[in-house]
Length: 207
Image (cartoon, one colour):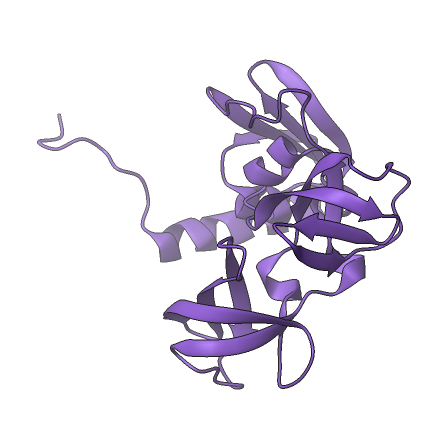
């Protein structure tokens, strides 16, 4: 027996094994069902992805489509997508958040509808002019990517991923561009509360 509990594989070994499994899938074409809580693992190994939470199927479909267009805020959370914040529809192209207006792609939701909006960290752009003012709170260097934690004037915090080659400021003020086509908008739940993510699993099928 082991003296200490088994804590899993370290990151390099786990990554190597995942890629070896992918090579085996491509070489022998077996039907494989993988149950995982790791979105990166699902993205690497799955052709078809099913997102399940609390015993309910939230979304199913082609892996690329599911990751690019999560059907609900809870599905986005389970895929590891951050930057989910509340707002309210001002017009078909605008969300209002505490007096700040954010342009989005066309929505058919009526004005006044409470919504949840989402944008991936890698889709946010630092800019010298225009955009929205923000304050950088923290900077973490992750090799080729630098991750910033920034706050909008509304108080909402955003994760921003930028390439390390274009070194951003580490603290202080900046301006950010939120591409309208990169913002996903969902109607908020009727009680305007976040679904409880207890007992989450994210099964993925790789063909």
